[in-house]
Length: 158
Image 1 (tube, rainbow, N blue to C red):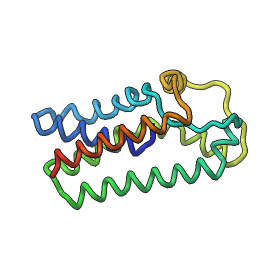
Image 2 (spheres, helix red, strand yellow; image 1 turned 135 degrees about the vertical axis):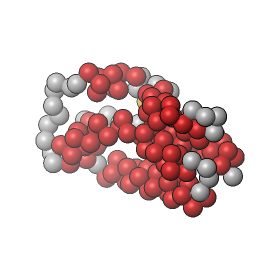
Image 3 (cartoon, helix red, strand yellow; image 1 turned 180 degrees about the vertical axis):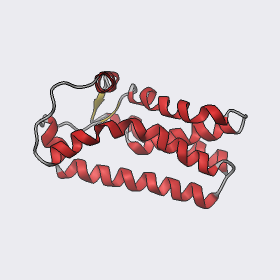
């Protein structure tokens, strides 16, 4: 899933749980939601390119920039609307996207043209394994999920 979908889902989970008195549990649940979303069919445009070539490519970088701007925009909107628990909602959005930060070293190696490291850690293997169904058609699942979660979030906080 895109970081935007993870962030919006984390925000919904955080607000919903905090408003029923479970604020202490929101960040771990938002973090774990990441893996649930990654188990759903979602977008990944591999186009048969070697992984490092795809990651270092302009299309991937553009997608990454748009995704980052959308996440920043979400946090700005939440901060401006200023609902109850706004700061916790922003933390929940971050917690839900945080597992993807483990890919940062791989991204930086790809940008430098360095080869992938063959011995991946158990959590990288797990994270890759749960993403069993990715491809170009996953963009439809992503779009429907984003619309539903964004609508639910703004229904809850406004």
